[in-house]
Amino acid sequence: MRATTKVHLVQVPQTPETLSSVRVWIRAAPEIRPGIEDAVRDSGGEVVGHSEANAIVWMTDDIASIRPFLSSAVTWVQISSAGVDEWFERGLIDDCRTWTAAQGVYAEPIAEYVVGMMLAVVRRLGEVITTNTWKPLEIGLLRDKTIGLIGAGEIGEAVLRLLAPFGVHTLALTRSGRQVPGADESFDSGGLDLVLGASDFVVLATPATPETVGLLSRASFDVMRPGAWIVNVGRGVCLDTNTLVEFLTDQRLGGAILDVTDPEPLPDDHPLWRLPNVVITSHTASTPRLGARRFEQRVRENVRRRRFGQTLVGTVDLVRKY
Image (cartoon, rainbow, N blue to C red; front, side, top):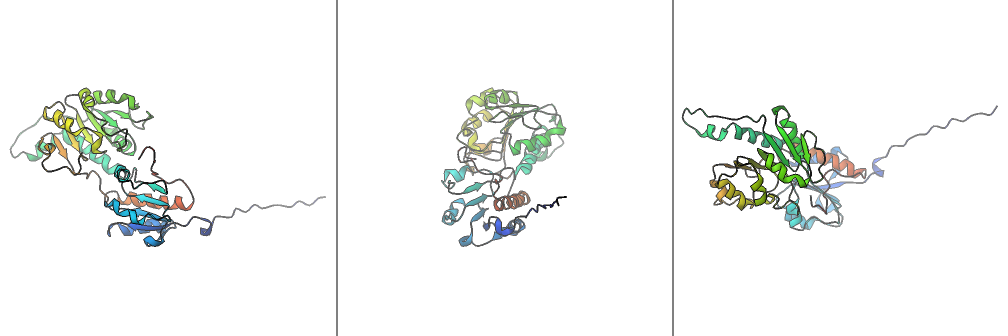
């Protein structure tokens, strides 16, 4: 009788020596840096000086000062902002390394801002807060309003989740026309006029790309409802500011909530500041502090992926420029 030999297949786990080494130099404010350092180390990376780094986490507004640190050894840069249009404008993003942005990191704070501002409009909170006499006002409800989302990525989807209990009708527009989770109707870019014409609130949440700069022009404002409001949390250059001022002055639109402007910062003598139906919030719908925990999670995840040679989250598309 032939003896049988049992063969045991042993799966040998990868050791740290078989993984990519991720040595990260961090440029961040002192109060934020410790959390980022912990995120790097938690995923097996090293926190090093810039001369030893092969990766950078950049968390300051002075983006041009990164140039001297982009040595050939640096193969990955993690940016703390979600938008990268200024990085492209300054010629900083190249094809010599992988660039990742913080896409989706600030979606929840911005979504709260959007919904809060729409509630403030229908409840006329601006007038209520500033009045100093007994003055009952007729107010409205968000319920049954139509909300159009122009650019329904992470921010748009977060807005839709928060809007779900309010009984609104939601229209979501994306370049591809994919079915956006939570939206009642989804459209591709050809449906822009339809979405604009049907919406009581138009939420602009697009990145600044060659396709979206000037997306809302005079023709766009012409098809909007006379009492409609614009909420812009994308980029100021995505709409025609001069035409917006004209339509708001003539009350051909209800008003505008602007967290972003063109130009930005908005000069003190700009006519937008003087319009009673405009709220400007100086790019504070989200802040680095509000997004700090989620950005730490992003760094943690991307350091882990980098070590294992996996695709990073938020990789910047060099063609589409976002």
